Image (cartoon, rainbow, N blue to C red; front, side, top):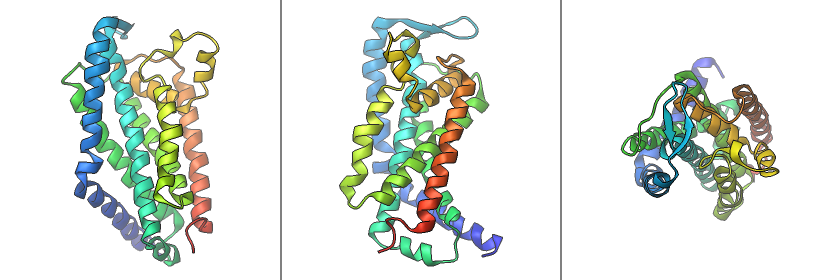
Length: 263
């Protein structure tokens, strides 16, 4: 398959994913906007007003609680929607059996994977921008490090899109794609430093928190927007890049072998 044909195939998958996101926007974009608005009202406005300052920016200005949790809420929305998009979309392809047509075509496995990952990342971006816009109604957001902000978003969305792809491959029924988000993804997100400063945790909870990969994503994203972080930024990028490489290799192997895809 020549390069031009590969690009057409990749474009077709991405276009299908984007059309799907926009066609059912009341399911893909509206719910996270409403949910995050409630988070800002309850945790930011009501609870945050009683907490006050939680950190200080590089210029010495005080960072309120609602400012502190805003990057974490954006990252939480990105993670959940990147994961949810690819699990529902790729499992739907399995359920409707047209994924088998892609597998028997001359299209390389990496093209299929890249197309679905791109769709999930784009949905994460749409939701992230939407939630970030909503946050401006409740607090101010600084952009201290644009490159860190953008790269962290892309890496985090890619990681959970890859995890969602693995989930979709092994899922046998629609209920199977809800198990990991409910029992794994949600607890890790809430315990990933979204609502608190991990440095203030007592032992051994502080040490245990460092085993949570979401902690590194949230803190790197918070550093990009607010200029503050609880962890070494180099470790954050090392963890994220390691997950992208490892999960990418696993997904390509499963896709190439047709695990859970061929009847």
